[in-house]
Amino acid sequence: MTLYPVALRLTGRRVTVVGGGRVAARRVLGLLEADADVVLVSPTVTTALEALSHTGRIKWLNRTYAEGDLAGAWYVVAATDERAVNSAVAEESERRGVFCARADDAVASSAWTPALGRYDGITVAVSGERDPKRAAGVRDEVVRRLQDGSLAAPRRRKEPGVVLVGGGPGDPGLITVRGWQALRDADVVVADHLAPQSLLDELGPDVEVVDASKLPYRRSMAQERINELLVSHARAGRYVVRLKGGDPMVFGRGFEEVLACASAGVRCEVVPGVSSAVAVPALAGVPVTHRGIAHEVVVVSGHVAPGDPTSRVDWTAIGRLRGTLVLLMAMTHLEAIAETLIHNGRGADTPVAVICDGSTSEQRTARTTLGEVAAVAVAEGLQSPAVVVIGDVVGLGADLATRARPTHAAMTPTREIARSTSASVL
Ligand SMILES: C[S@@+](CC[C@H](N)C(=O)[O-])C[C@H]1O[C@@H](n2cnc3c(N)ncnc32)[C@H](O)[C@@H]1O
Image 1 (cartoon, rainbow, N blue to C red):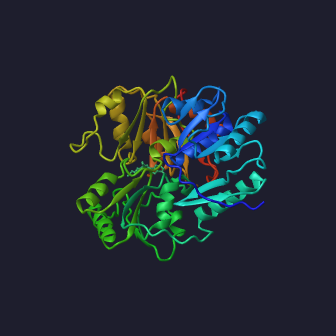
Image 2: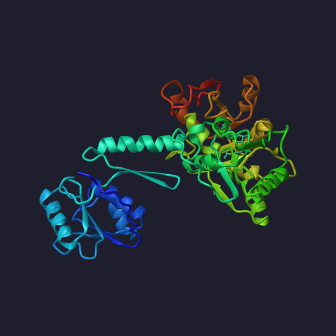
Image 3: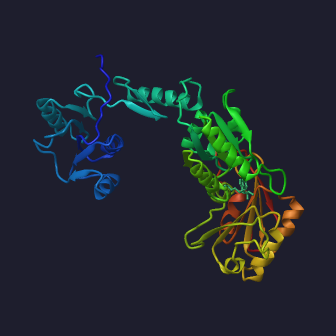
C-alpha cells in the first residue's frame, strides 16, 4: 500500500481522541504541540491527561464513547484497548468523511501516525508501513545526524542579533539543545574560557571565534570591549553567539550584555544554561538541597573579601543560616570567608566540599570542615574554577564517594580527596 503523506495544520481545529491510556496520552501531547482543539472521550484517563484537563488544555468527556461524539472533528484518534470501540469510532469517522488513526489496527486505519522528530524548524516524519520500531529507528538516526551535523542540512539563515548562550559547567554534553543549535548557526562566537571549549572545535571554518576569556585576577577582556564586539558584529548583519560558562545570569554579567544590546537597538535572546552552582555539586555527589536536611540554598560570590567596602554580601546574616551555602569565585578569599562565617555563628565542624574543574576530566573533590577548609585548599593546591559547598548536605554524599557516585557518560572518574580530622565528615 502506498501512503500519501501530508502535514496537517490543526491550529484551533477539533481533534477527537477516544481512549485515555498511554497511547492516547502520547497522541494528545503531539496534537497540543500542533495547537489542536483536543476533545478526549474516556471513562478513565492517565494522571497526565487528567492534569491537562484540569488546566483546561483539553476537554475531557468522562464517559464511554457514543455515536455522535465525532461531530465537528477534523481528525480522530481511536486509542482505546477495546477493539469493538475502536472499530465503532473508525466506522463513524468513515461515515463523516474524517480520517481516523486506530492504535490497534494499522490496516483498518484510514490514517497512520508517523514516527516524528523535530530539529531546528524541520519536522522529520517517518512511516515504516507496519513496522513502527523501524520507523522510530530511522527517525532517531536522521534527527541525530541533523543534530551532530553529519547530515549536512543547509544552515538556516538567522536574523542578525545576539544570543547569550549558557554553555553549562564545561562538559560539552551539558549545554542545552537550544544553546547548541544557536552555536551551530552562528556567524561569530564570542566565548569565555569556562564555556565548553571542545564545542568550538566543531564549528565550521567560516565561523569567527573571539576569545573573550576573563581569567580571575589575570588577563581579561574588558566587559565594555565585549559589549562593543557583540553590538558591532550584530550591526554588521551577523548572528552572534555569546557563549558563557554555566548560566549567563548567575554571576555571568549576562544582563549587562542584554542591556548593551537593548540600548544599541540590537536584537538579543537569552538561552539559559546549567549553572555550576548546582550542577558541579550534583556531579560530585552533593545535592544542594535534601528533604529534612536543607530547606534553603544560598549562592554567594566570594570574589570580594568580607570586610571589603565594596562587598555587597551580608556575611553576618549568612553566618547565621543553617542551610546550604554555595560559594563561587571564592578560592582567593577562602580563609577570610571561612573565618567570617565561623565568627558569625556557623559551626567550625560544618561539612564542606570543594569541587574543582567540575564536569571535566580534571574534576576533583575535597571534603573537609569549615574550620579546616582554607588549610586543606592550600595543602591540596585547590584552585579556581571551584565550587565550595558548605552545609550538612555535604555529609550526605560523603558515603557515595567510596561507592557509586552520580556521573554521566562523558565524564571520567573523578579524584576524591578526603581530608578532615572531624568525625562528622566522611
Ligand atoms: C564568573 S563565575 C560564572 C558562573 C557561571 N555563570 C555559572 O552559572 O556557573 C565563575 C565561577 O563559577 C564557578 N565555576 C564555573 N564553572 C566551574 C566548573 N566547571 N567547576 C567548578 N567551578 C566552576 C567557579 O566558582 C568560578 O570561579
